[in-house]
Length: 101
Image 1 (cartoon, rainbow, N blue to C red):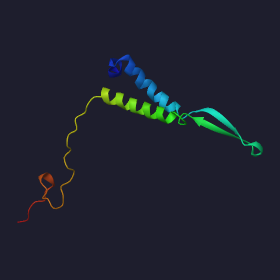
Image 2: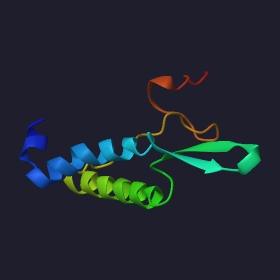
Image 3: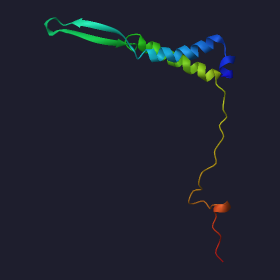
Image 4: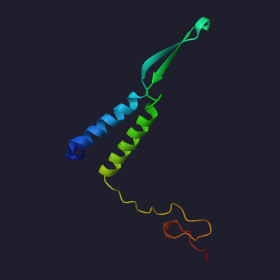
């Protein structure tokens, strides 16, 4: 929480409202009625992914990822030791079997 408070106000706003905007794209915001004459009327629900919503969704995702990547702490990756020696390699340490006399 201290790291979040140390960010600028604009970055805080983007990190909070970006995901909210992204999830709101899944809500149905409009219904379009199409009249087919004698066949009847069809009602089509439209969510945020119709028309410009796809572009907006991709923009929000890329902006959120950019802010998270620039504000996150870099973690150094270390090589983990191998779990088990390969069957062709002799084992060493406490797992080694004693030699027979």
